[in-house]
Image (cartoon, rainbow, N blue to C red; front, side):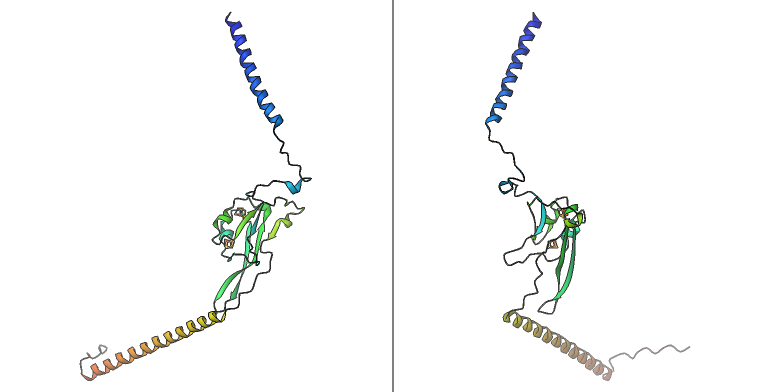
Amino acid sequence: MGSVKDYFSSLGSGLVSLIKGMQVTGKEFVTPKITERYPEDRDHMHVSPRFRAILRLKYDAEGNHKCIACGICERNCPNGTISLTTKMVDTADGKKKRKLDKYSYDLGSCTFCQLCVSSCPQDALEFNNDFEQAVFTREKLVKKLNYLPEKEEPAPSPEELARIQAEREAKIAAAKAAAEAKKAAAAQAKAIDQAEEKAGEKPAEDLPNAE
Ligand code: SF4
Ligand code: SF4
């Protein structure tokens, strides 16, 4: 008797399970399909904006990027994917400044960890979601990210030139004043020594002991 009861009980739970499964199937049957037909439907592809496809330098509308060639991204990259070459240029105020010469990025060894982007102090880097990066040779995966010509140092404005000149003159005047003060202090010390010697207040210097 017990086995008949078990039989109908398990039959009932099987039917409930079947009905639930058919409900899910029926729901999916009427849900609109989202299959991407790539590459035929390339224009309507939906790629998440946060998808990390390739690293790039951010350029503004005037063609400037914000990289200051500090090398932090290069040092933080765990794979040696980034390699920078830099150059020194002279600025208007006669100082030296390091500038980016070539920003090299090897897509083939990048693991898209984004350490370079998050550690950049200038917010100069980003990933874009252009996923079509297939090429036939590995060499082509090495990209130069500063693809526009590097701009020359901007010429200083007349106000800036005047400020630089004023700073230079102030520095020269301060150096002259310091030298004069040093000279005056030395002359004063010498005069005091001479006066003390004259007055006999200064003790005679020790003569070397003769054996
Ligand atoms: S991209 Fe950023 S971290 Fe890398 S060198 Fe340029 S400024 Fe420095
Ligand atoms: S995402 Fe990671 S592996 Fe790729 S370049 Fe940046 S730091 Fe290197």
